[in-house]
Length: 224
Ligand code: HEM
Ligand code: HEM
Image 1 (cartoon, protein in one colour):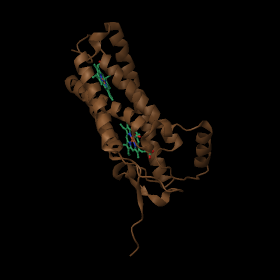
Image 2: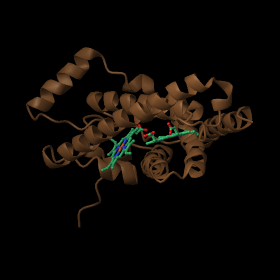
Image 3: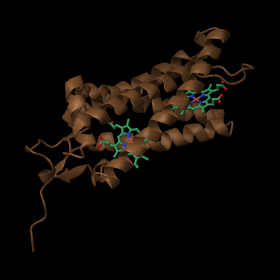
Image 4: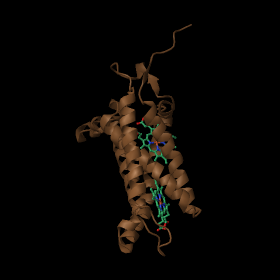
């Protein structure tokens, strides 16, 4: 029997947990807003705030595949990658590929906008509001609510593109990106050169978690 193929850890467990909690969280945020369950919308919103803060900090101190500095591709690298893709010359990337990185930055920016504006949003009759709405005028709160509504639509478009891109990699390029986002691993043979596993050291996980919890605490107390 052939020995099992060597595998390398591409996504640490915290990035994977972040991703799937985010997916559940966004569905829950849409559902609670749709049903007028605003108490739950606000509570879950604080959890999403913690998640995004964790991921932003993780982009600075996490392993290589989570780092923003490594995800920033030069325009020439991106153009070369897209040319290869158009010619169906696909070589799996260790971490996000240059086009994927762009979509990740866009989704994180839309999410950060969605969450920040929600904190200050006020509905039209002033009955429902985010925890920090007391810090701004009613007009400013309404402006945040308008942006909150628009950024949700932007987020939906970005998520649709994201899922379509993942499906295209699977069906057109025969590259299953979903499995590594679940198990964390890819076959080592996928990569031209050996790669270090994307381990998440505990002290860094704790530091990022502490900052995320501090953000939630600050919002919960500032709003009074
Ligand atoms: C609300 C819906 C979704 C949002 C907001 C979202 C957002 C994201 C974000 C922010 C990342 C970057 C992960 C990181 O570096 O931290 C990502 C990656 C990824 N997502 Fe999603 N996602 C959504 C739904 C899905 C679904 C439904 C699937 C599976 C069908 C999926 C599969 C993936 C995969 C495979 C990656 C890694 C892509 C790569 O290899 O570069 N996502 N997603
Ligand atoms: C990913 C995160 C979020 C999503 C997807 C989301 C989604 C939505 C949606 C779809 C609406 C209805 C918009 C409309 O048609 O009027 C809404 C309203 C609202 N959201 Fe969020 N939200 C998020 C985060 C937050 C957070 C963090 C807070 C505050 C803690 C918040 C507070 C509010 C408030 C106060 C409204 C009412 C505004 C109005 O009716 O004009 N949201 N949200």
